[in-house]
Length: 191
Ligand code: ZN
Image 1 (cartoon, rainbow, N blue to C red):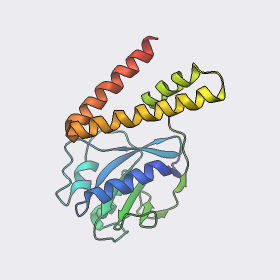
Image 2: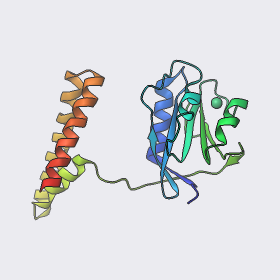
Image 3: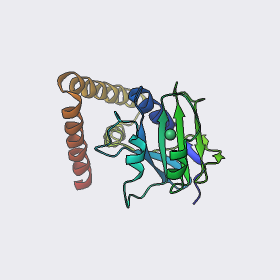
Image 4: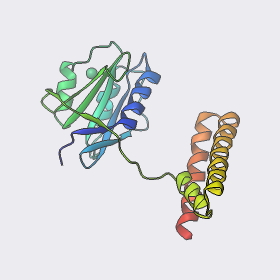
């Protein structure tokens, strides 16, 4: 299926990632669900401190993907000669220029020609926490209890995040969160 859309949440994530990488280049692969780009695949070991980050990313062999994205810290939102060569293997290629806003990106096809990519709202699958929250809400009958359960869920979510963000450095935090997510998933799957 031809890719014609990008999920607005995914676009925002891309813009934030480009911003965070500045003044260095951000580069990643894109994954699609049907006709919509939904996921960013950031390859481990991609060194964003060198100028050719996108080239290294795109040269990964046998990595199934729908497209590519990379940033131009210079602000120019058009492909370089090198970009055009690498665009050939992807049907969708996004370039984001400084200041990395909703107005400073463009999509190109494998010929390097401008293409329209519609920004759309996309319903992502529930995270482990959402599932937990739904289970919690399911146990309550009337409206008041539901509000209470929602509040409790929000509070737990806030505490959960605050605690880990405060106590652990980013690397450890990520590992730990993954572990918790896996454990939660296992729990749900065993039920
Ligand atoms: Zn480029």
